[in-house]
Each structure stands twice: as C-alpha cells, then as structure tokens.
Image (tube, rainbow, N blue to C red; front, side, top):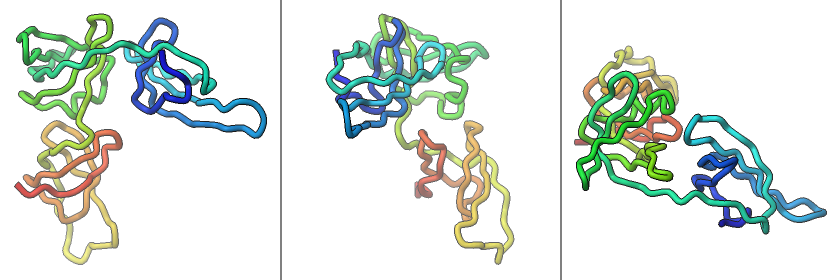
Length: 187
C-alpha cells in the first residue's frame, strides 16, 4: 500500500484490478480541507487513461511488479518477441498495446520488461537512446534561420526534428519520452 502523497510519475498502482502507470501527478493543497493528488494513470493492459483524486493520507494499492532484462529478437506483425537474458525463454508482448514501441526497438538490444502477475505488460525504454540518421534532406547554405530544424528518419523509422547541420549516417541522441533531439553523438 502507498499513501496518496507518496505517488509520483512512474508509480504503478492497481486501479479496478488492473495495473496502471502514473503518467501525470498534480499535488493540490486547497485553502480549506486536506491536500490531495490528482493522478492520471494509463492502464498497462489496454492503454485506457483514467483520472483519480487521492487524498494525501489515503492509502491505495501499489502493483507488485518485476523487471527483467530481455533482449529484443523480432516483430511478427502481432507480437514483439524478446528473450529473457537469464533463462533464454521467449516472451511475447502484443504490438497493439505498444504502437510506438517499434520505433525504439533495435535488434539485439536489451530492454527492461515489466511483469505483473507473471504476465509481460510493458517495455521500459532508456530515457535517452542513440539512433543513426537513415534519411535526411540537405539544406542550402545560407538557409540558417536561428533554431531552424528539419525532420530526419532514423534506422528504426522514428521521425525526429533536428538542427539543419545533421547529415545522413550521423548518430543522434533522442529523448524517448518526448521524441526530441538532444545532441549529436560522436562515435
């Protein structure tokens, strides 16, 4: 059990018998009455988002989850297939529940897989990842408005807006939560 005042973004709660990850948390301290947390949580099984108000002293059930390091193998159109790095067991996660995951998965890389009651329910990506620019348009010299950006496509198909000086074949660091360019990576 966890108190409402201890809930943070990323906390996993059990709401209506399903695991939900907190995507937004707002702490409210009104002039009258007790403080509370306004929480938006995403269902890890079906993607539905719910909003709840939880008083800071109220206790709610936090989900008991396990994280396993697993290597990404392939996607077959319906599932992403991973291999448990310890037992070499294959684990499948439905693609329908993780639409944008395909843009962050690289063959052979390891990711944390979240398990709830023995079921694989979520893929945890690093906060920042390095990608290679696969497609990039050239810009004309002098076409350099301050802060100008252009879209590029990475080797996984992710589209990212980058500064004009980024060329095809270069490596870039991308924030996986916002899909934003962070910096060029020198290899």
